[in-house]
Image (cartoon, rainbow, N blue to C red; front, side):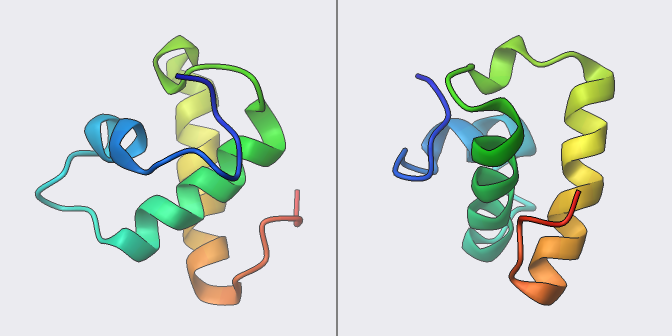
Length: 69
């Protein structure tokens, strides 16, 4: 499944880990991934790309703004 703002959270929850991830975190990560990696599968991201997205996810959780590269 490819990342977009309308994709379900299952794929993202799977990569983040369902047990320790809230719906808010998964939604924030989806927003970041949709902005930076639209059209790609979360599984196709390198470790460096994923870690960069995780860092932005933290900021999005606090501000609600994905557009802050």
